[in-house]
Length: 332
Ligand SMILES: N[C@@H](CCC[C@H](N)C(=O)O)C(=O)O
Image (cartoon, rainbow, N blue to C red; front, top):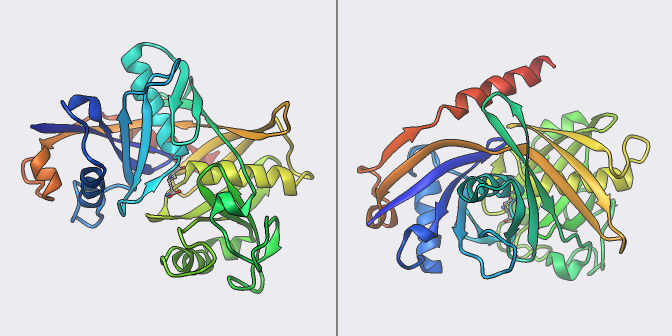
């Protein structure tokens, strides 16, 4: 049996999108984990250039929902959400069902998604809801600062004597620190990210996504992320949404609720809007590209055995358009 996957990305955060409805029976969780580990490897060991993870699309049993998305990180662990990936899954399901405003089931919520105006010619874009938000240590799996219930713009001495951190789940866990430019591009993010995701530390035993954020100007931030289960990524959608929330809560001199925030990242840019609902709950809109790079086919047994010799590929041409779009950002 052959497996067909689409190589997709949002802001250069890249994935293999696997629609399990192509199989008579979905893969087991063990099979999905093995597949992700095999195909995501970088440096020529994976399928083509590898990926940050696999986006698994399944049927949903929920009413008014077009499909279910699961997120398997490159190391085979499962994440509860993926903002950049959700945009591409929204495009995939929307195109299949000929609709552009619907919901997708994710681990903790059925999230609203919507097609929006293209970012540039041949650079389709989608807006997705990021929620639910929590600052609770229990939800975050956090045991820091003598088991503090929340950490909002506070030092965590076990991590750094200089930086302040905010811990927020959206619903995957994020640790956010506002830094100057030298710190943004320096080695601290890698050091802290690796330590917190070593599976041995007692602060985040299940790991955490770590982001450094630089305020660039009014309604404008740069976000660099070390992802749990992946390492450095070009961009992390939930991290950019969590960073935007903390930007609104901590930097009212520069931004506010309901304003469009320009978020640049190493792989491109997205826009976010932070909302507070009627019950005071926070939620974010994440707006960005949903690029389909190529369609890949290979025997499923080969993919599960990490043999990619029979793989065939059809390139869409969208990556060239995306790269031209990113070039325009540098001159803007
Ligand atoms: N890149 C994703 C987030 C992926 C999940 C993360 N690695 C985790 O384990 O929480 C995004 O765009 O949000």
